[in-house]
Image (tube, rainbow, N blue to C red; front, side, top):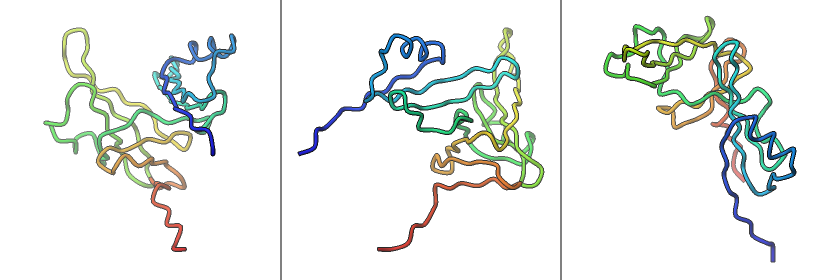
Length: 149
């Protein structure tokens, strides 16, 4: 009979993950979610590992968004709340990630970051399927039909 293992989950920064790796403290039965901050363009990417084995592409996956809209103005006012995230754009033109945040005076601000072929993003109102921008189209490969057996 095969041995059963409990998979634990860990989430943290690249620095903390590398610290664990340096001292051989990575567990092969732990899923490590590593969040990389890129201060040059204020982007975050997520890379997942099972122990030392990477299970997501090097490009990573951005934090999930709530929905997709063609323009920032198309987002309903009631959805423009602090820390709400949206994918904004259209096929053929490209997409950006729009995040609503609060500044030091508690005023609502809009942060815009790029979204291109290097990233994937899960969309909440599309059943958290992963979407990528490929060949000028927003597409998911989570709906692959493998046929019948």
